[in-house]
Length: 126
Image 1 (cartoon, rainbow, N blue to C red):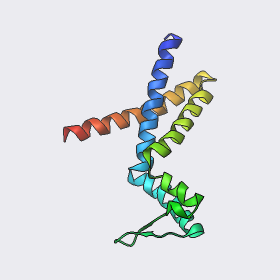
Image 2 (image 1 turned 30 degrees about the vertical axis):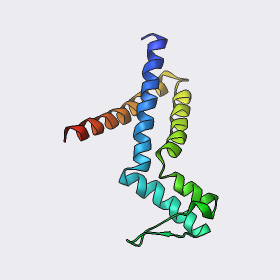
Image 3 (image 1 turned 60 degrees about the vertical axis):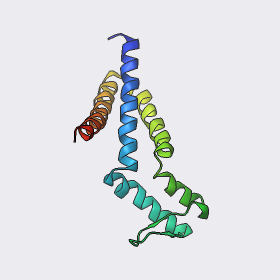
Image 4 (image 1 turned 60 degrees about the horizontal axis):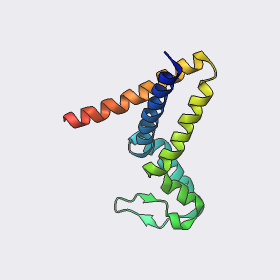
């Protein structure tokens, strides 16, 4: 495969992996359990919160300090998607130094990309 085609495919994998990881962090239950809830609890324990919902749950109030702003950012696809995209690009650049790492990175990115596409396609079929 020539270098230009490989780069185009890698960039498509960067896009797909970024889309899936952003959705995982912002929308999926695992992202809420592993990312949003712990960061929100940490922010609220340090800076307090004034946002409480009817079900008794609470959210960080971004007007209360930088920790609460960070917690609020974990619910924003644009906000967290930028940072996830930077991490995916960084991992691609690091992996590109050896053939073995490049192959492993492509397999991982392909798995995330296929999962994202399959989820959206099956969602449209229902």
